[in-house]
Length: 292
Image 1 (cartoon, helix red, strand yellow):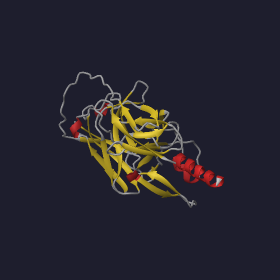
Image 2: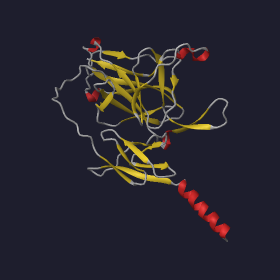
Image 3: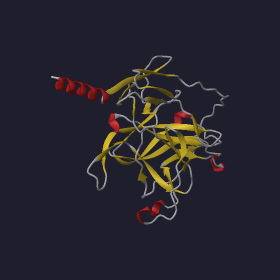
Image 4: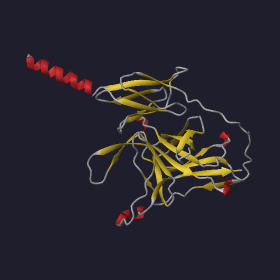
């Protein structure tokens, strides 16, 4: 009898420690649910994204600190035991605005063409991938961002990612969102050139440059399984993957739970297959189309 009770207690404990937590993210002012919030366990690579109703779930064995990040809201940390998380909208100081309208008479494209040797880099929870575009004098007569091209590699159809546009802070790192609107892009299976129209935003290329950011959405509908050479097991990945070129310039940035950092240059003197990476920087394959 005692043995049966022990087994029952052990079973219940095992069930509890593997229980799935559930919650919903809401606006602290309106009380409305917030979709596509990226959520991850602080200092770990465990995370998810809230669905269109603001709901989310995570497999966590014990109480953890969760980090919540959403467009237009302050980043918040909270206990995994809370079922409702309220995020506070960001307060922005509005500068004097001079309204201009683009003419759309000519276009120039900036950024590298997708290389044949371009690769996909595996996603990690909470990561944002940013391509920095410095302002050039040659852009003076084509100052409006008309379109953004993002090159992806997806193992499934209809995978979604979020596109963001960030300003540059005094240290040259990504700062605030320049477009306060969710830009969710759905991609086809395979390698694709995704063109996102920016005409309605009338966005002028800032004089200190701009960051275009690819944000992975950790949704169940984005899940896929990847087989690796010489391994029997499969790893879960979140689609779509972002393509990367090998370049000389250091304009590639990545965001993790510890903040933004520059993508490191690869070591010199690499041999064999890895020679193509020699002293190069992996840069997100993202281009801009400017207009006058």
